[in-house]
Amino acid sequence: MTAESPVKFELVDINAILQTLPHRFPMLLIDRVINIRADYSGIGIKNVTFNEPAFQGHFPERPVYPGVMMIEAMAQTAGVIGIKSVEGTEKPRAVYFLTIDKCKFRKPVLPGDTIEYHMRSLGRRKAMWWFHGDAKVNGQIVAEADVGAMLTD
Image (spheres, rainbow, N blue to C red):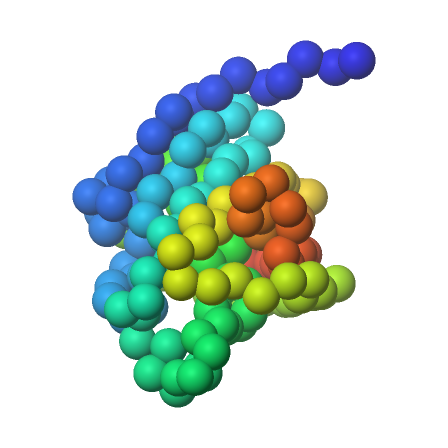
């Protein structure tokens, strides 16, 4: 059994996320990131509320949090992990999608749920990063994907 990698950042709160990512309402889709480890893994947290703009049309009679927003939140979580983990990348940067692979949606996410985006690095080349993400609600996987992102100035 291998030991877990040490935690580098226990909590990145919303104020630190706003200083790290250029995203803003309504496209900032994570509330905090916890347990960023030296192996470039971490957990993004999203508290889903009924007031989310997406629920006006997705779907008014039975609100379901859009899967595409979960995938974007995975990339944002990966961006925070990458920017905070690497020396010299503390300033705000743009994070752009490169790839989305092996994406699966397993269960609907509803208002009142808290999504945990469990992200772990698959690899890195210069400013390009690849992560695997499992979105979980109450410990159950609701979505998963491999995402690639690029950090730019």
